[in-house]
Length: 550
Ligand code: C2O
Ligand code: CU
Ligand code: CU
Figure 1: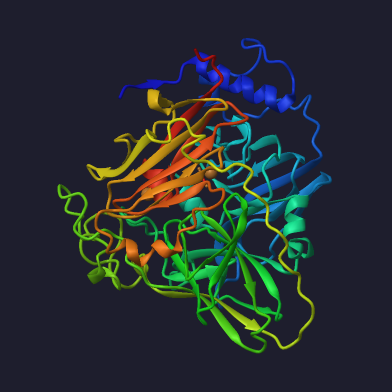
Figure 2: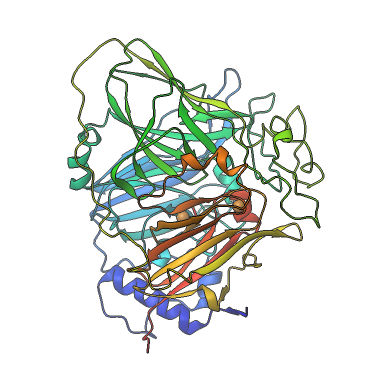
């Protein structure tokens, strides 16, 4: 496959459509927009602001601060602080005392302007994960700004109600910046959602649950010690930035919106009292009907919207647990580099075990080493249900999916674009390629408004959460691995109905997704959402082209 550099022409097509969609004006290809060179070198690329009239203006500032996570010495973190500057359609809720960024709640249709101020000592950029935005608002590594600089985002929130989020995306530094605390929620709401889930309108019954793992040193500071194969696996589980998190809730139905904000750890989530997991939504919003699962698998970047009815549990305690599972393929994998047995059942309790030491990732043993293996059981969140009772909101009719993709309406359904996931020569690759910010291959060009099927083919020994920018897709087919031993420890927890932007791909598995590339043209990205894999190389550009077809 011949990879080619982005031509100025392709870039201008992309930028042009973005600008036209953004400003609602006619695009003149050569009168507007920076050149590719400008774009790749500009320190502070901001869009023109003349004809975009925002409904609301928000500032988000990245800065260092200290928070009290453990008792004793506070922990130095990197954090987002939000502020509503003017307008309506957006609320900004900061979380005092917690490293996580603000919760933006945005009415669908709102035109937002966001001023991102970078007060860190290094480059950064914000990526709005899951949203359709013009290319220059996608927050790609080449759009990062330096210390003291500001980037302006102008976009209309066109996506349906859903639990979107935002996080840094600078070159090679995403994983560490997220680990140090930077991530926030971008909840889009609309009238359909409020009709379907009355609790959503009432706030107090709609609770975010951001699950992350962290390691602390003896002075209570974060330790970042990623492993080259698995990424960063912390020793302790935090929910909403809190260790040993506990919620005191009423005996009501609640909507718990879970985000796996971890760099690399996968969770197999279940209730301690064995009540089923009732799922009403995924990455891109509400499902057409409630789905019931014994447990739910959640990989980094994925979200799941749970409906949890505690009304019969007054004065009881229920724990959201992560159950043990076997994440790695046994015996498969890269024999050249001897990584086949990693993640097998005999390494469950000790991630520093076979095959991981010597990877140069800093894993191994006790005392500040890597946390427990992926697949280790944890308690995630304790829920103490009070005795008080009152009415709780009912669950209304859920929204339809609007479009259901299948063989009949996805042109290349039976011959999807293949994307192989492999580690070769100690480097994570997609279709044997690594990230190059200036490169787009022929098979990474798609056409505006086309519906396509892509297929992730996991030829590696560990699961990968595959994420595509600027689309919401549907999972249309899974082809399980030939050896289902490890698969069977997880597959009852897959949720393939609904809109997704990140999907779990098991070792040996093929996962086919279908999506429409619309309404923006330009260069976007796809990558593994294990942040160390992304930073290391398992990320690529793709281009949405607005070109005439024969
Ligand atoms: Cu949440 Cu490109 O990522
Ligand atoms: Cu994203
Ligand atoms: Cu990966």
